[in-house]
Length: 154
Image 1 (cartoon, rainbow, N blue to C red):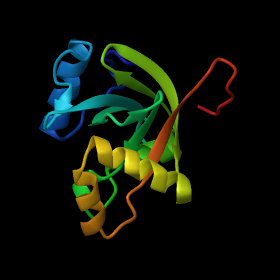
Image 2: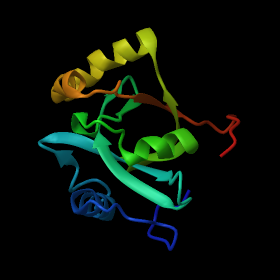
Image 3: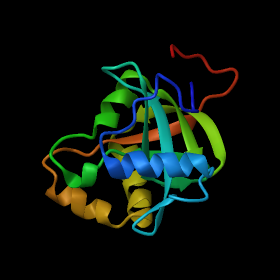
Image 4: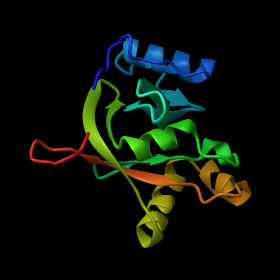
């Protein structure tokens, strides 16, 4: 996956997200690494409709080296656009500071999802409010490392 600027990169339409990603990447995460004082990571993925490289900052939620991406969209009625990208192309790059790793996004459900919600809430307490006001079941994705022996279609 291409992580440096390329003709395939299609920046976000959101000025906040676009500018945050650009500054985060330019400084290897030394700057633009928070949202409302909480740390973020940047996800680099393939667009579901465009097939182009897309990037988005998400809250940094990690436990024992496993990350989770919360598709909250601040509790809005619809999933964020990047949700569809992860469903269509689950092998992505996660950048946490200067460290980059290839991960596979797996949507979680049931008891596993309930356990991760308690973890996510400890990182970003507003998630509970988002769940309360959203008409949808907010998706969670575990971002699991892709090893050299992993098989994948991406």
